[in-house]
Amino acid sequence: MAKGRVRRVLGTITSVVLVLALIAGVGWLYVRGDLNRVICDGACPPQYATAPDSMQVAGVEDTEADAVGDGPIASNALKQAVSGPLADPALGPQVGFVAVDARDGAPLAGGGTEGLTPASTTKVLTAFAALEVLGPDERFATRVVRNGDTLTLVGGGDPYLVERRPEEPSPVVTADLETLADRVARSVGTGRFTLTYDAGLFSGPAVSPAWEDGYVPSVVAPISALWIDQGRGAGEDPARAAADAFARLLRERGVEVADPGPAAAPEGAAQVALVRSAPVATIVADLLRTSNNETSEILFRHIARAAGYEPSFEGGAAAVKTTLEQDAVSVDGLELHDGSGLSRRNRISPTTLVQTLVAATRDDRTSAALSGLPVGGFDGTVRSRFDQAPAGLGWVRAKTGTLTGVHSLAGIATLAGGRPVAFAVMANGTEEINALQTQAALDAVAAAIAGCGC
Image 1: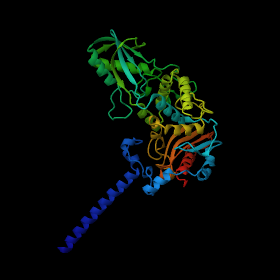
Image 2: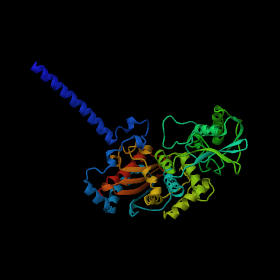
Image 3: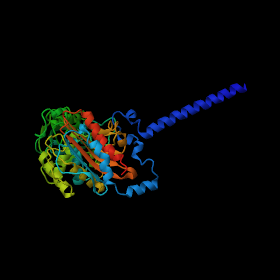
Image 4: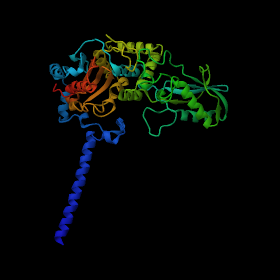
């Protein structure tokens, strides 16, 4: 009996040890962030995922980390660290690179103000200007106004307006036509009305003449101040599609309306109801994480309008340039034709990119241009990056840029002690090179900064 009891006790202890080991193992993987790709459907939103260990200062005592964090960054050591990765043939014939101390903008490596095709790193400029000009708390209202028996749906340029309430909550989707129709029905009651819609907040063409044929609708929708679901599946007239959806919702609630037509909202019309977008800071963080083209172009027009320019592609370009100049950011070599980076005519120097990142650190109102950057190996467009450059995992936050023959990466690499380096590396003319090799070469440059003993 004694031997059997001993065996049972030993078996129980073994089982407990195995369970504890399994829990500890899963916990270790979770804390490291290795389960992020399993527990989320796609890239994990920050509120649902655990950052990798490397987001924290590892292997350095707090007091030592504080001391290193206050210290200078060795420019020569950084230059040496990136010299090999920058010489990789996979970066192609045109390479631009700049690295500066993000705390004060002091130059560390690289230089030059030649404008290169930036692709989606253009969004760094758009995001910064939106926060600077509009403010992080600004929200865009979709309204219904009434003049007699006429109701007018007025687009306010909410890039994430949807038709019906989403089943899964999203930080950026805070306004829907279903809620708006509920509020209108409560206000006006049942009856017959004429319904019109006003998408006149923006001006100029809905499609940039600087975009390549075929981009619409496969890559980006026609830009409108009134749309639902970012204009996807709405053809050439997203505003009409949104108004038709709103008419259906009103009818479901006993408000009889004929098919809607376009018309400017009458001056002095009484406001009946409205729904508001997420704050600009939340919108900016999402567009940087997901590289959303439609959102970027909507914000481009809002920036122009708020800065006193025509709310169009041209007005947005002028407003962003003026904003950068006012914040002492170099605009040498700068040429913008859109806010998303889809245009191959865009030109931005790596100096402009890093100075914009540094400018974002100077004020709380623009800090979302940094905090919204996705984390290497963790989320957004860099979720699957840095596999071949693990020194950058968790230590690099960066915006990607990709077109055929164009690759770029701009963001912040964190050194030991939390010392931030703003960097931009841009490769043009890579059409004949495997795109994955070029991306890996960009990652290697950023990882070399993060791993530098500088």
